[in-house]
Amino acid sequence: MSLKKFATFFIFLICTSFTQGWSWGKQQEAKEEDGWSWKAVAGMGAGAAVALVAAPAVLTAAGFTSAGIAAGSVAAKAMSVAAVSSGGGVVSGGVVATLQSAGAAGMGVAAKTVVGVAGGVLGYLGGKDEKDSQEE
Image (cartoon, rainbow, N blue to C red; front, top):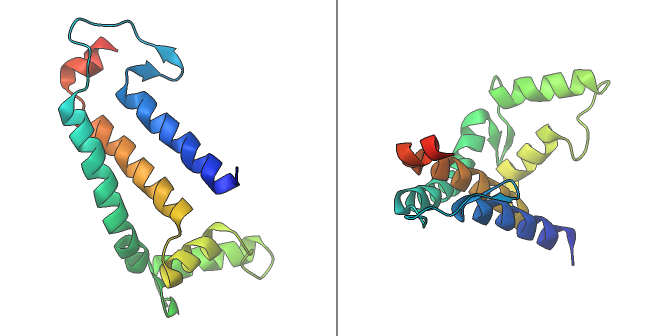
């Protein structure tokens, strides 16, 4: 199994554990009305969709463009900090280089998976009912 497939599978397991009443490996006691909170599930889907659509726009707004790093942008400042901290150049595979690659060529499957899962988790947490939070 490749590393990308393993990472995707692992992230999938983490996301589904939130929706099935698990709390970091410990199953919660079953409740009478135990089941899916459709509001939370809808929040998860909406959060993942928004994150996937917004990520390229956020990268461009930060200055990671297809033409390179925009002058005077947050990306330019990040590149400057990265270059100074590494002794004069941007480290290949570092955060700035990875973000610039995503801004120039688009996000790969692994990056889309991570962004979608992060958005889904935030959407799920935002969509949970008040009573669900109090019961935990």
